[in-house]
Length: 303
Length: 303
Image 1 (cartoon, rainbow over the protein chains, first blue to last red):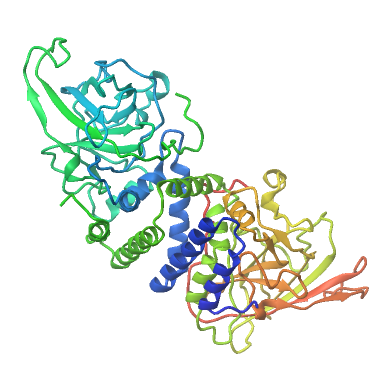
Image 2: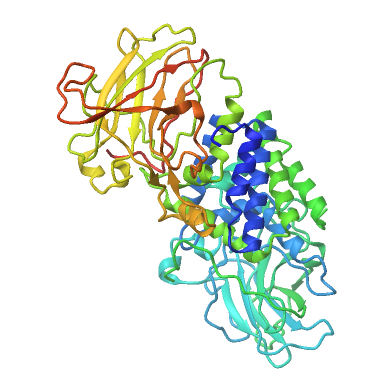
């Protein structure tokens, strides 16, 4: 049969995937066809609008580089990333809440010593971060790798800056929890920032009258063997964008009170050089398994 | 509000597009959010599956070049292109049927003289093509540009070959209809061919147990002022893939009988150099308007 009306066409496309070897892949593809076709029919999509979509998707793919993932950003601003997070973490059982990975995860980093300054030379208000990783009963988990990354005082990640290729990571590190499940380090207070608006995803946000801002936060990826990998942020209380995060990533439980301190010594006994902030946030891990995400870039980053 | 369950999240994302200036854009985006979120919820999409999707879309975008459009190919193999065609051409009123543009349209070409051989130097069985462009009442339309492109005897388009950059178009041309609405030219008989399988779209087809073949056809794009642009193919009767075109593009009315001829002279009075084929297909244009598609490539082709 070659003469399809539009309903027969959809049935034929669904049927074309009948021989897909893996049942889950078959299900996902056939449901995708239903969703896509239903969308075209429901909107009576014009040829010109289809062209705009093809061009938009093409530019989104072409904007990706070893250190920029525009499709993740698009998924983020459409709330898809947070929804995937939600349907996969319906029951937390007291474990720390999860949120989006975001487009600036570029993979693991060399391990740094506790107390290290992960933002040397950067301007910004100084902050001491202390954390502890435990199981659901509060038992400390030792030897757990914890990846950290956050924006600088101008709202940029290291990987967004030209200096990244030559100078390597900044405000980005890995620590291994000590025998008491603890980690601590020095950095600067991140600030709220716009997602990149020089690509299709940011352009979409601006052209639809949305603001492009994310409230200030620090990313954490905690990967303890025998526990679900924990991908989350810690947000900073009082940020004006907590209620309107452009990627819908805020959860109440992830907002930390960051104290203003003027003590002469930081919690590890080392001297402070002026006023500083103290962020304290502990992570409770849920037993289980899962794969630690790999950065999804067109090619491996050089740095 | 920052603490979303998954239904509230969808509502918040839809609401975020409320200030979109253009009503149609707002509608399309809000319906897109509904479709995407419904898909994620319905399939309980895992984080790993989302990663596969991000990677797939990224590779699809990166595969696009000035002469290759992998997202159009993806749209084609998912039947989306034909569905967009269907919902935009529900009433033909006797006009020629439409079909997909396909990924090998690279824009207009220099005009050639009637009778020209558009495939000089190519191996293959010789074919003479004659056509006439009329309105719905059969009145000839003069001075109408008609773009033509088709695959060679090995199943490749010129733009798929390394020689394209230096040698320019082959089996690809533009003619202008004469005072009687006619055009005619020489070429070779195209054959059925696989879509490119060295990219994500073709890979999807192969991994799901589908064949990648398209039945033999010649593309036509007829753009007469005052009439809807006609994007179509003419298929060749008897092809084994007419019933299972990988892009679902065949319509019964678009299948032409291609005659085997051994006359010493072709219809324009010029001598034949051996057996040849005769393709005759006329186009009936529907009054209306529309934009002639522009090739959607990351950058303008050099050739």
